[in-house]
Length: 153
Ligand code: SF4
Picture (cartoon, rainbow, N blue to C red):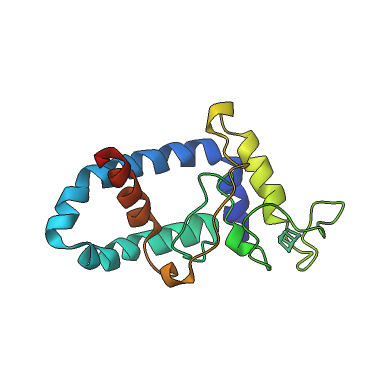
């Protein structure tokens, strides 16, 4: 829902904190997930993740969440799915050149970033190319997996 998407960017600070807490919880649970089998966890986790992220962010379930770096504005709502800053067509009023009825997702991302503490702002981190094989998979699980790998190394 578009209104909710805008709300989420305005409340990026609290949502980022909640995301951080969720990540910590999933990292704690990860050894149990491994015992059960990561593949088996994917589906039940997506049962929660997909509607939650759809509601708050109009998430497109790309499986590689950038919300923590983009002021809680999902770049997959950009009609060009640009993941590293706006195209050259943003209108003077901040609206999208392709869909003038909506604000450019990168204008929203910038606004969302301003609500974060300076040390939490990560909008200038370059995002890797999208791996389409992960579309529809749990980005929460991928984030926990990456964190666990870092902690174990
Ligand atoms: S104006 Fe913004 S949302 Fe629209 S296509 Fe360009 S980058 Fe994407």
